[in-house]
Figure 1: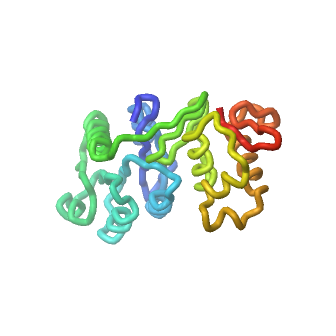
Figure 2: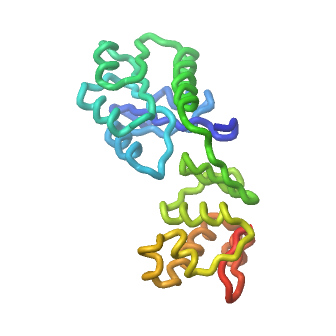
Figure 3: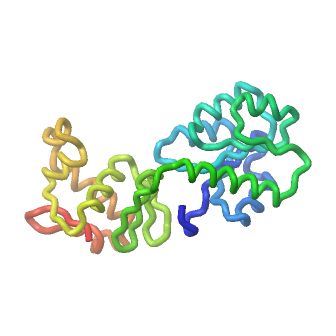
Length: 225
């Protein structure tokens, strides 16, 4: 991960996620933060469009709750704060436990160590760029002009294909086959491509009515770059 892309952290506080006092300190420490309840964390971790580097749980959870988080998190590390029984928490799925009392410096150091350990275990990232657009394929992340853009899975696949084949003109029928697949694509209305290109322009272009990034080549198709 580059320095311009802070680690994304889920801060789980079942009692009061919106008001937890740790949030400002973690953000000042360089993390991109989302505060949530345990149930919201499970949903977020199961969303393939959401990339999360670390889950920090602010209160002691029972074994079932921890195991639910562990199952949803996959390879995302879990740091449990304030556990009265660290051995039980580690056996139930936590990757690390920080007992009370602890200092902010130690908390930030533990968070960074867990994120770093995960990054070292991950394969090299594939980064695709065109002008202000940057896509990190493995993280399912797209930024435009530094701003994070949320795309549907199909929009992501279409943009990825265009980024991998910049400057080439692609007819709608060929995009259907390449992005939607050889089985589904030929049976779809070519206007399906027009709709998805329109959605991409709304999210990426400064002026979608006068696109500069994804252009239309009249009578031939679409081109990126």
